Image 1 (cartoon, rainbow, N blue to C red):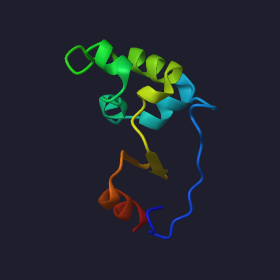
Image 2 (tube, helix red, strand yellow):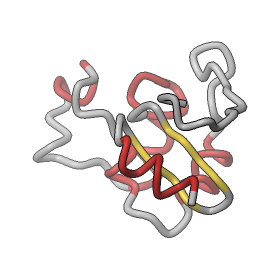
Image 3 (cartoon, rainbow, N blue to C red):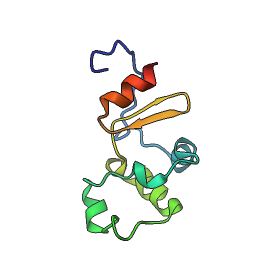
Image 4 (cartoon, helix red, strand yellow):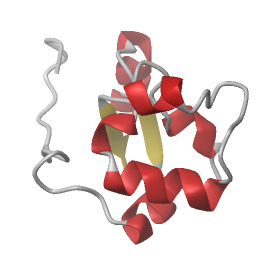
Length: 94
């Protein structure tokens, strides 16, 4: 992982999409909107920046449209880093 010496277990969510239950558990009490990918076409078409879907609807949409999930998504235990965030990765490895 970016030369930080970490080994990752990966999952191709295009081939193995996350279920609604998995997404709900992964997001937990976090702000679900952070998991939405603003570069995604569906995000832009639905103007989600201004008309944010409910948590349940966002989870349903992300489960059916994996590219709507902000990536990479790196998890260690209960900690999550979304997007390319080298400082976040370093903090995760402490």
